[in-house]
Length: 393
Image (tube, rainbow, N blue to C red; front, side, top):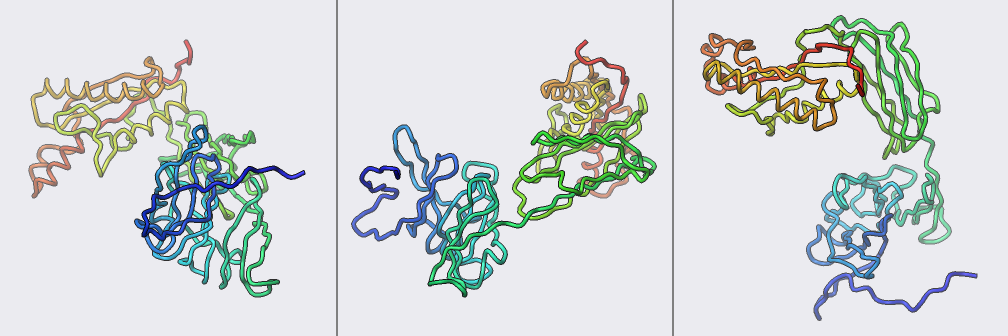
């Protein structure tokens, strides 16, 4: 017996006056049912018909104010038939596609509420030179149906079923000594969000790969690369949101562990006479410290010393105190990120170890060059002091 429904009710998605002839149609809920998408040619859009959305309160059975999907979705043409797949990808049809007639487009989700990346035209044979529209996927499968007026159908607009081709993923990587460039037979662990995991050793050329059917769709993989006597490293790759076969190529460079040696890291800079991390259009020192955070998380036995330096301006005593505060700023950042306090030492070096000497700076022609040199001296580096720390003790 089929489902029973009550009488149909009109949903007023837009406020109309007596002269408003705006059209509204093609309603479709998002996968979480928090928003209702629809098509309208109301004022405030980018062209003819645009895709809009309103928030939906299921408890109150009430809808919010219309919001345009934005220029990554809408164009000067007509956008219609919105439908969201289970992974948050938006599918719709547009008269501004690249194949002719109405084309099916997709836009991957971006950061923010109902935000999407720039829409892309689906390839042939989903699209043709005719009208292709109203695509719907089966649950979380790579198959579904769509409508098309292409040649060979039974009528003007026909339904077509489709199955996306299987995607193949390959992960290839090599491990090298950072200083010599020689290959390293490091230990590699790969752990997937789907529960799959592998551990193996790189070959004599430092290479390793997973290129069968091991890497799955819609999964994220963490890679850890280790070798005794070297600083462990790694990263992450993901097949989430991918719509075609992909090879992930990586090179990992391991630095040898040398106690009490200065290790360079991404720029951690400070404004003149300040201890706060410098963040502007050119550098984000907070992001730079994420590099060191990753090292500390992967190498749980390390105790490091963070060293901050000032430029040569100012009195020696003041510069030593300023640099100590700067080093402590970095230590506090790492502690707040979860690193044990006993693994971190703050050391202020003042102006005792300049990268660019005063004589070099004085020979520079412009004030801009001189200021960049002073800023390079306001830096932070780290040293590995011990590697026998026992976590939890």
